[in-house]
Image 1 (cartoon, rainbow, N blue to C red):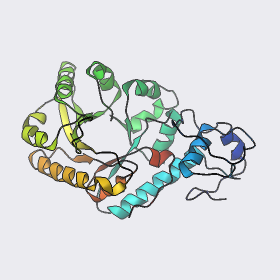
Image 2 (image 1 turned 180 degrees about the vertical axis):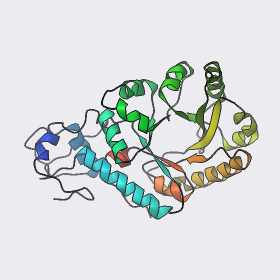
Image 3 (image 1 turned 90 degrees about the horizontal axis):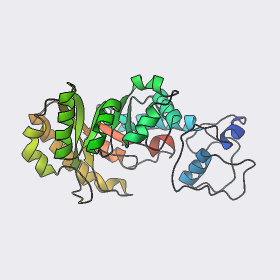
Image 4 (image 1 turned 135 degrees about the horizontal axis):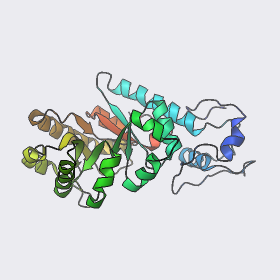
Length: 297
């Protein structure tokens, strides 16, 4: 039996998966299995998430894909889709790992991920210290994509290779101060509040244009990209105008600062639209670890 685009698997995997043998960190809040009959064994969190995300109402099928198989299939599907959308454009997929554990991070790396993004410093401290993951960390770039409080800066500098969401002047100045004292240089992305949402942090486009010389003058914080934060919408095309505006701003900034080589925009629900509008980095979480890939025309 084939579930959508997922591969056919061996019958012997069923008991292993249903009893929880799918990785130690697989969690998703708010998802509950919708099975019409109780399966022969207690379903694992992986199976409950898989059922909920695909609206499965039947009992456990004869052959269930493991998390590893789902990650492999989704990674290959995403890469093929990127190639179709932008064959001549270099697009890096960031695997957002905030909802998965060390096992799934390792599997993402084995699938091909060389860039991961974590939201919280304290979560990354625990995850990166896991003995089954730590040997693989040298093969990936680790970016902090969530908000960073100034009192967490020392821990963040020890854990991450890049601060992907520098969203305010005070953070930029504090990073410069810490890095200067440590005689270090670190890369970062400046955060653009593309939707001008008052509840979200980030620089406005006018502010970036007016202050770009100062932003790119910090010697120990090398700004290599812009991350565009857009309003959430279930409609993938809804953010196209924001992506287009962010791309135009990025092009203008690059004319002054060629080292600003990256434009990070687009997530699991709208990454294809972002690529069409010029993204060089897309940030994918659920598209890689659970949800089947749906075409966006």
